[in-house]
Image (cartoon, rainbow, N blue to C red; front, side, top):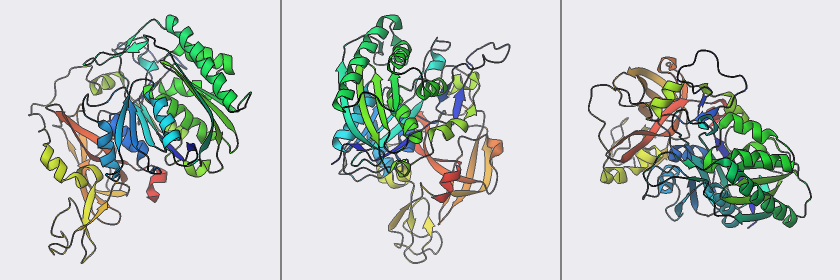
Length: 459
């Protein structure tokens, strides 16, 4: 099996925060940093599903790298596995910690794994680096080298107290970056030099630097060739934790030409360096929208709304009981519908019934709907829309839509990533895996609909 990247994708949430002033008395500083913001119904599981949904790997395991897993003792990768509809014989595992994104990429190369790195980064309100952190996901599939072939790799492990979080805590603790920057920069230079030596190269066409320490990243970029597109992208997204090396690599692959070389350097709790040669199939290897297009499509988010979404601002919701928690037995029995959005297709008339049922909703024949068909990659057209003003979600109202799915099936679900007033009859929308609510320490995941992007209308 060749060591390389066969396919890749990046996912940026639909929202961007550019101003975190509580008492803003004017416009934000021009050219200031901004951060990508996961919506109130997103977490690392949903973002990983979005990045991975069109990727396949050559029999390797499924890996999820993150520092913000939704459960402490439960494997979050198992939920991703179910939503992707992977074969039960494919193993699923979580990788934790700030260095886990680089580790996942290494296993993609070594074992032909299917891996996603995703993070939701949250600081205390007003923290100095609040706009310097961000949310994103990146995914890679091994087992081939259409996107890039590995030429060299090197690692450097250094035990250093830089960023950490105790169990039960929500926000990272950070040591003075002036102390840790020099250590991480030295580790990064050592790893980069050894990776280049293994690749028998003195220079490369693209240098990509990711680091949890902004000073170390700046020093490494300056030493290796000065600030470039990766630094500009980081100012637009923030440091996205475990996802950051993969996000920067995906953006570089978007613009790279076949035959060019890339040095990817991640300096976090040590360093990991990879040298790639861009493959001839790079244009076919990307399975989602390019990073640049996703940046251009983001919606501005107000700071108060961001604080509500993150639960950092306690506001009074509607006077109604909390949504019920899902129970394990029905979740298991209905996994095809809940996680894979499968309907039953009638063997007599061919119509699709949703949710799946023993009798066809169209012709009424019982037992003819044994065949299951997933609707998660199809376009749905809105036929009815209403607004829910009593939702327990951290929004004053959400849109509930009924939509007919191209090829058969009808969905009654929430809309997301769009103002409720902008949802119209006839609007094309696509399913997206989201978190509905959390009750009794159980996250309830299901599919919603969001406005279709131009390239998605072909699915």
